[in-house]
Amino acid sequence: MNLHSKLFDKIRVKPEPTAKEKAAAAIKPCEWPGCDKAAKHRAPKGRNAEGQFWNYCTAHVQEYNKTYNYFDGMKDDEQAAFRKDAQTGNRPTWKLGEAAAVFAGARRRQAKYIEDPLNILIKEKIKTNAKHGRALRRNELDALGALGLPEDAKPAEVKSKYKTLVKRLHPDANQGSRANEDTLNAVIKAYDTLRATGFV
Ligand SMILES: [Zn+2]
Image (tube, rainbow, N blue to C red; front, side, top):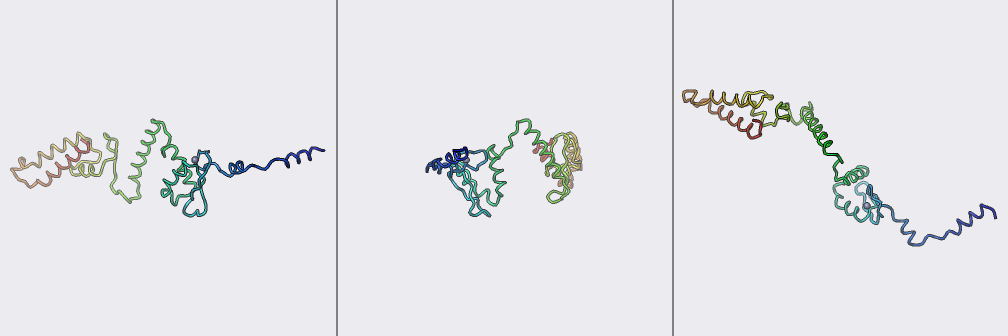
């Protein structure tokens, strides 16, 4: 008996897998990223993938069913990416300091986007006020305009200009004439706006 026939006998006599072993082999691992539990459930992949199924464990088929509509129309790889993100709560896993830096960058990019010459949403330029370090709000820009001040006016300039205008426009300074009443009201309203937003 040579080596080859020995090997052949060995292979031939290997017992048939039991029903239990067959069942175990038929169960695939869960397809949820990072999960290696037995996938006992099938979930339809959905639109444009009729007859195709994800294999999930009990916990993940439930998770999938909960979010099924959300993923409607999303491509498979996008779904997989989303689920992977979902494992970290859909938040990037930053340390606190890194997150702050990223948010600051996002705010700078957003400010740039507002000034983007696409000209679809916002036509006026929103400049960053030196003191406040943030983009001015629309009502603040309007208020500064009503006071005849530039967009980069400092809070002290706003206060000073307000006092000057009130003195100049007040009826007491105009022999009781109320000719400037509308302008005066607009000035007072503008100053109130800037106080309400914390500008002054
Ligand atoms: Zn799973």
